[in-house]
Image 1 (cartoon, one colour):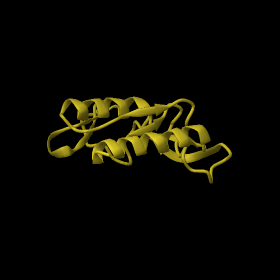
Image 2: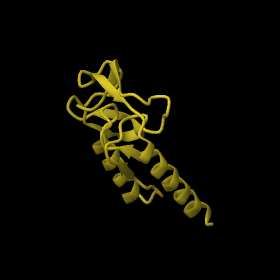
Image 3: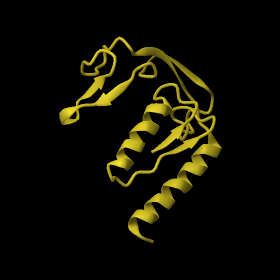
Length: 117
């Protein structure tokens, strides 16, 4: 998982926790954060900071997996969905060349490790 620390669309914390749970379950997972990188940090078409007023973010949501892989809102104990009250509007997109170059190298290293080269 390659994640920007400045991502306000899909926050780093829950992704970091998910990667940790996967690793504890014996899955081959690697989680890497890139400082000051927003959502779409690897998208050169977003060279200027773009604010997306209608973009829905789960940044205020606490989610957990339940039986059968259902994702629950921890607070309400109900299945998480697009009308969940914890969702918040307003997100940021921005390309980060340094993070993109590092992510390309990190992804290549991971694949070489998995493939065994």
